[in-house]
Image 1 (cartoon, rainbow, N blue to C red):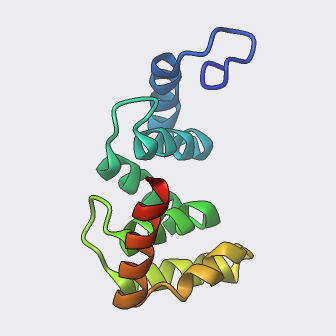
Image 2 (image 1 turned 90 degrees about the vertical axis):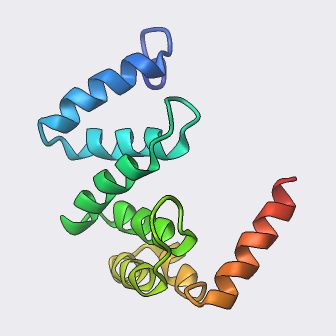
Amino acid sequence: MYLVGHGVERDTDEAAMWLRKAAEQGDASAQFNLADLYWEGVRVSGNVEEAFRLFRGLAERGDVFAQFNVATLYQQGLDVEQDLQEAARWYREAATHGVVKAAYRLEWCTPAATEFHRTTSKRTRG
C-alpha cells in the first residue's frame, strides 16, 4: 500500500517499516520488495549488503528473480566481491527456470565482457 500509494499517500519509509516486519516473519514477497528497496537506495537508504543477504536467501529457496539479482550483484561486484563463477552459477539457475535475460547475461560472465558492459553503461547513463 505505502510503497505504491494504493489507497494512502505514498510513503517509502512507512513501506520499508512494514516490509521489514513482514520480512522478519519470513514473508518471501516482503523480503524481495525490501531487498529491492535497499538495492535501489533511491527510496530508502541504500544498503546493498542487506539487499544481497535477502536476495541470496530467497535465491537459495528457489526464487528465480532473486537468483537473477544475486547473479547481477556478483557479476558487477556491487558491494560484494566480484565473482564471475558465482554469477554464472546463479544466471544459469535462473535461466534453467525460464528467466530469458539470465541466459543472455551468462555471456557477460567473463572479465572482458564485464568490463566492456560496465564502461559502456557508464557512458550511456551520462
